[in-house]
Image 1 (tube, helix red, strand yellow):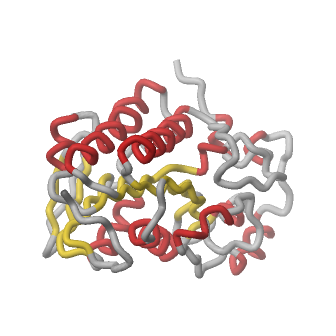
Image 2 (cartoon, one colour):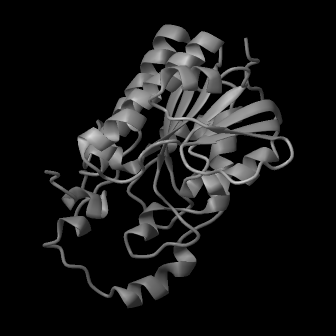
Length: 273
């Protein structure tokens, strides 16, 4: 059985799924600093292995491959998924079947901690004039958000039934800098992303916790008070970008649903034929 994560920030072996994705590429070198061995996985090309790194090409919907992937790991940082809105048929294999496979493999191998990359799109149909918290009921803005709501419910089930601890991260706009006025509320810097994942890995008791992934922004729609127990303290803010972004977008068309709802353009993506 893999050892339980402790307050220490060094692990024997971590698994990062989705290592070739946009955020996987950010986390891959950063997580390596906190473990002896980083097992990086994706369906896409991963390049050359760094010292102390294992590279595995695996499809998340392949149950046997995922079972092998979780062998001998201390904890999982599960970022593998279709990460934008698509048809349900395209979302289903990696996001829903794949996430189930990760949790079931964790149960079979005795892995006790999973950091699950959820999304703010779980609650994308709340309005931008509302402040919600992690316990607010889901209001997905599409099939992508729906798949992440499924993952959160799966994490809750595996905590309640099998005592596998998870932190579901409802990630906002994780980019080098915010690109529009919506992101003044949703921005998560790459450094704060690292801080968030490490807090989720090392907090001693998390059960199943849900926390929004955002920096210390001046304006926000998300209240993380109920998740402060994981010890995440963002250090960056979107405020230095405010003047430039507001001058670039001096007014917003409120007839556009993307400017009324927290999910932005995701609320009007589709339908898919």
